[in-house]
Image 1 (cartoon, one colour):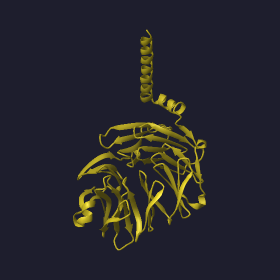
Image 2 (cartoon, helix red, strand yellow):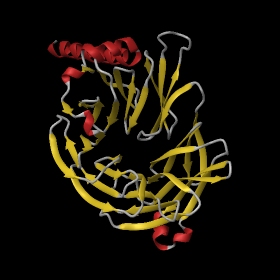
Image 3 (cartoon, helix red, strand yellow):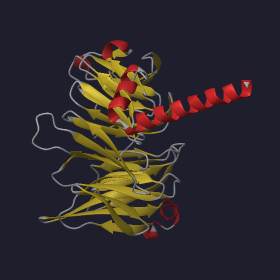
Image 4 (tube, one colour):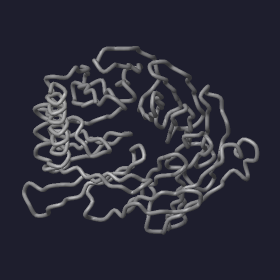
Length: 376
């Protein structure tokens, strides 16, 4: 009899858990209530640690991994998720430009000469380059590529290994490299090339075999992807050996010489982004003509094309993406959503938010006088 009672109780508990999960997944109203009242995902600014800054110091901030980095007054200062200083590194930076991947942070002086690679909170290497830095990228293994201008060439691409040793250089005499990306396996470097001939602008993505670039440079370009004359390629990101490509009117995947269109960007799409780990996202208005317009955040897997949808009941002001997190700015509110379409955190502020930066596990909410640190 005792065993029967225990089995009945366990069965009731299992059924209750299944029903609760089903309601949470299937009913958006219940999910919002649970997120706010039980899971405590609704956060106010008074609950967060913060980094005090002076507006006159022109501090720039960037989140990566578990850290918030600030640059200003000749120093790179790295903070943890409690807003405590971890370390300070002297840098010569006037106009900071950032690129991050996992635990690596690449910092450059845009239109200047200095380049720094940080791993966690330690300086890996520093370079003072000849030319003006226009573009930078770092992959998950610490491989770095930088684009230089202001020389006798329109663009020079220089690649460095994790130790800061130069691997190779690629020179562009009649065109400009406007973005670069390195594959996760360190085998390929791709770049966006813009050619201008009179009134015609030609936009291409070219892929370099890194091994060939070191040994037989003339044979190093293994793939060239072109677009029509009405399309401008803006930026690229690697997912495995596939190049996710953001254009002004579409998003594509370039792979092994093939071109696949993932999304057509028309006037119904308010925002779109490719800076996610294996996903793209877009926001479009689902109910037009209403005062409180409802928006849909659509998150699409680039491999299986499966789409997750997150509903937004306020006007979207901006969109920020990094790896597995999407931040939807609604003015004084920010909803942090993962690539499964689930709310991670909802943040509410009484001040005007100036900017947002997202790392792997933290986000920085930037105001004119402080940076609030939100753990994700």
